[in-house]
Image (cartoon, rainbow, N blue to C red; front, side, top):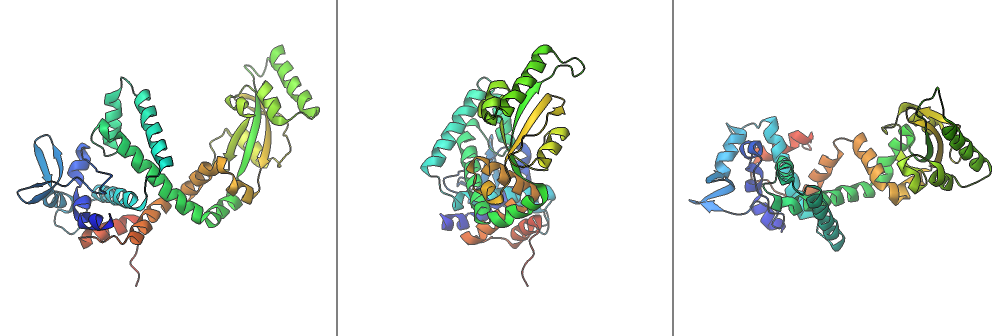
Amino acid sequence: MIEKLKENWFVVLVAAILIAAVGYYTYDTNKGKLPGKKVDGKDVVASIGDTNYFADDLYLELYGDESSASSAGTQVLFSYFERAVVDAAISVDDEMKTQIATAVTSVKQSYAGQEATLLTQLQAAGYSSLDDLEAYFTHYYKMQKLIGDAYAEDLENLFTPIYEEKKPRVVSHILVKISDFDNITEEEQAKLDAVDKALADGEDFAEVAKEYSDDGSASDGGNLGYMDADTNFVSEFKEAALAAEKGVVTDWIRTEYGYHKILVTETDKEALMNDESIRDDIYAAIESANPDLNAQIIWEAGQKLGVEFANENVENAIKSYLGIEDEE
């Protein structure tokens, strides 16, 4: 695989602005390169209708005088680099096959009768037809695996600054909706009183939430999962949740939705890192706090694979895009 990747590296990377602009190119995820095709001895990187686009021509579209690339072109280069590296670095196991098949089926069902919209979205992501839906999700789940493995390997170092600065925690709540705070109905007041009594009597918070909460989380015992200082909750709720002590139910907190009782169920760093149910949320927090990290992971994966660039300008353009400096 990697030898084939090296052989075709130039062809993979030089399909540039012209193809990206019209949104049509094909990608063979099984080979880690664009499908091979030659016309008059020249490499074809894409065909649109009856028109062939050649590697040499597209290289000039990208670089012009062969010395510098446009910012848009460099983004396209990195996209190609990313796809090729991820495809070579990660294998599809049975679990991933199931994820891919489930995602493809779900999307096809969701877009039944709206195939033109789905095709437009696929093209915007760099795919050429509805047949590429499986390729899209194959790349997506391979990427998730590559990034997730890198995060897991360095989780302590990545999560510690977030833990120290953003007060991450797991939160549950009970919501009683109030239609008019100036005229609380007898029914609304009765529910508020029932929640207070149940909790005062020592009933489990999750069970009280299942019985009385008006929020969609009621079926899960009011569990909202992971949150931190950056979570997009209404300000009154977020401030109260961040100030709450673990295991202590808050007083009623008023928001635009009604009155909430809040319970913080976990704040311990090790417990948070080991909780698989919030792993994706922690990874999202890490990504948000380190906007360049994923690109760096892709670059490092390429280095481990022994990727060789057929042209120094291409390598330098990608390094510049990533902010990578050559070691002295």
